Length: 215
Image: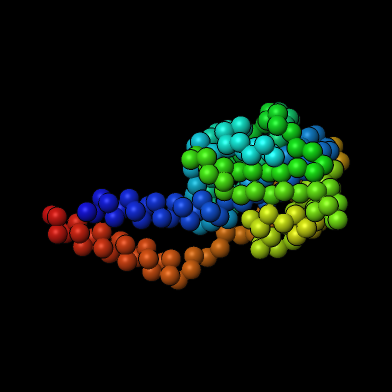
């Protein structure tokens, strides 16, 4: 019984953490190449093994994200069409920022971003246009960023704007002249709700009780 409870607790918190992974920035063209950023906004690390990305074809498994490995709470990771080392050099990124290069399902001025977990289930989607009327900022040489935390995961690109140097995201100009903030976000990992801590403590207490009974 205690093993079953442990499995249920782990599964529950893993699902909660997974739900907090979001698309947090994108640029369809400019600088050294397009990129998309994903951020773990939860309070627990998420294992990206088997996770994948696709554009508007909406097919799980198209671009494998497994190489990101364990993505920590608050950590942002990046995929790009160019070589990862070239991208990191252009944006002067530290080696600690995880970048996967070489994806070929390139995005356009108006497209869709889809993030899937290891089971092929949709985790986040962002459908965007190329101007305010069409649904979203045109992200050529400037990335798109969410205006509020509530915009993340809402699949409403009208709540996103173009990045600018020195904005809330700390955006800056790359060596090639594009403006963005790949590898970082202003949306910090949230503090766990009181009921979340209560559930964890209750679960651990129950596990301890069952362990004593089985001893």
